[in-house]
Image (cartoon, rainbow, N blue to C red):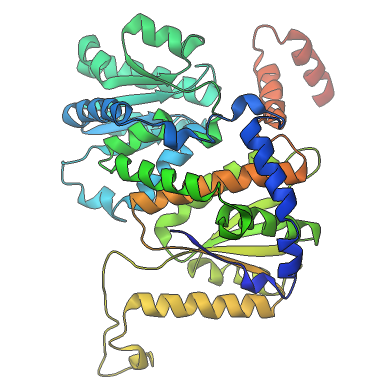
Length: 444
């Protein structure tokens, strides 16, 4: 089970202050459970893990098997919560050099629809030429510009290379049950489809088909992923003293109230990079509204100690740091001895590389605390599907609680629409004539 250590927050915010928030946290939990909070029509994630049945997972795995058997590569088309969760889990569980040592047992998982980069899309379609590829199109509406553009290109190429009959087998839609362009396309073309639940927003959707299907196609154990999330769902419903998600939310709130406006999520395991990217969307899009919210940032350590370390150690003291630590790596590698010892590192000879890494983690934590940075540590036993399932639900639950403490609607994102309106006006989209005229006048 996840272990939370907030002892190194105490020099900045007392544990008594954090524990005093227990009644407010309990009320926040009650509001989530009763659906009396803002955005209560998007609470489907709250008990999602415990609602998932073996039959549903079997259906996901059956479609994944078809894609695995029919494809050398599978492109996941989606943006934001429609791809970050899947990418985070796949990157965390994959061999770091999978792209170099692909053995043909698992299809290469690629991602598109998350940008409008012409070079990126051109290079992707070039790579796919002559390959047996499939597509998982993830979009509730089917009209999000980035994803719709990518899917247009991929659908056309897949049909041209593999024929329309095969394309119908290897293009899967994950979309709304009844509405939208993606649903219309899936029904018209006869694609296998899964539903994005109406009551689960994108950033909370990794444990729906949005995340589960790509993860299963990549060859990872979604049964264990869900088992970990189910166990954390139970733990996150416990009283404050036994509830790490509630304690993490309360600690964040106490630090925010004390003027710590930026949270840096740090890891000492490079495979966790995209877990941090997913975490940034989860918290940033959920709580960043009404001129409130902690700014979520991330660093990969020790790498970024040689770039961002100076700022973290000595910069403006508006930050706190949360470290995800993996207790047991999957491999064992010993620090080698060298007869000449020119680098002076023979004192480490015979030690596991992970021991050196753990001492770097502890030494950095102590240095940052001494430098005025409160530190939270989240430890998981191993980097596997079970513990990632725990971690995902842990963060989701803590996010929901913290937004209640802040007094914001965790489940909307009104600010996301601003850039879209300007972009459509600049491109002259039909129906935006007035906005086009106004923005042209503004730009002179």
